[in-house]
Image (cartoon, rainbow, N blue to C red; front, side):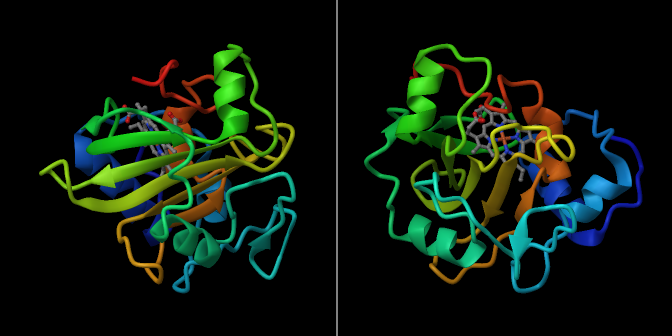
Length: 201
Ligand code: HEC
């Protein structure tokens, strides 16, 4: 990874992500502006100059997963994603995510099943993050496609990226941003930013 002077929150998130699994992508060419956009404020809300947002809240009528941090954390904490297609068992992440289990919403499931090269607006994946024991849920990583085009306005900016290391409804996320630089580097290697293999195992 290059030594870019990232804002602390982004750097911390990237280090956490990399530190958890020891894997790094090292191609974060997005540089300063993307890193700035990925900044997470103390209240967990997003401050993204380029995004179509108002008061830090992102509107996505087509999304069945909330894309505002507080609403999303509550939604996750109450397991609203449980009906989504998901992996059978907790497994070791091939990336930096530790022990994980992936869920995909119906739009993304359909798109993955069709082998589409681009996923529709509203496509979403939720990744449960587990402690080393593989049974204690410790948080979530989420990506939701909130624009028709994944890269309009910058790499992965059509996706909302979220990561929280806490399971209470009031936990504050480490990452909550469009095109978060700490996430898009690796995920750009996937198919339209989705890296999980289909069918889910
Ligand atoms: C070092 C590479 C890497 C980084 C950085 C990374 N991921 Fe991932 N991510 C992966 C891999 C690999 C998978 C596939 C499943 C697995 O093995 O964990 C994945 C899977 C996921 C999934 C399930 C859907 C999918 O795309 O497969 C979500 C959601 C996710 N990551 C969110 C995030 C978020 C949010 C961030 C930033 C905070 C992030 N990831 C950073 C490598 C990475």
